[in-house]
Length: 157
Picture 1 (cartoon, rainbow, N blue to C red):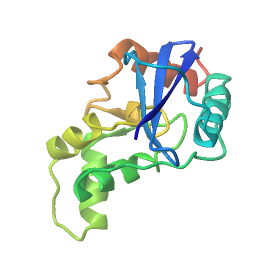
Picture 2: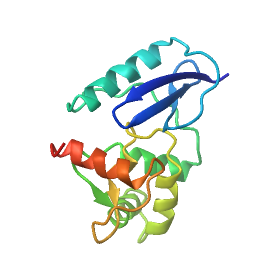
Picture 3: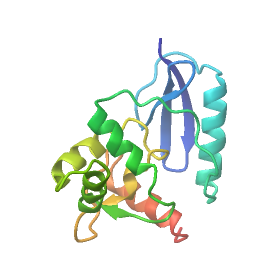
Picture 4: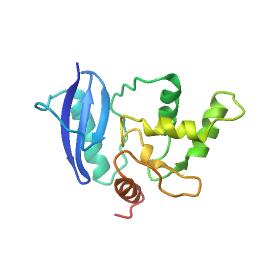
């Protein structure tokens, strides 16, 4: 069963989803049906979001459930290691993943595909991944939001 909860952020409405125990989704502008379900994981996630949008680096991560292929999960786990206010390139993530898995090379495009399928935006910070030349590339919630999130984390908003 999927439970939902909506959160009004400064960048628009956010839909949270859960299996009842862990957060399974965090998406902007996703249509919601039904009433908000009060769950402890939603309370923790709202606390995380309040800290984040309040300009503070959250010092905890709500329980997450990231059901996916092992490859996608390994990429998303790397995303969780990108420091608040920092960013990396798809190529750097590919190098890290190749090294972690003992491979000589990893495709930056494959990593980009996994990054693009991240279901838990913000907390799993795919917005902190940029192109090889530092350009802002795709973001499921829109490039304007990606730009604003990075600026906010760097104290520029």
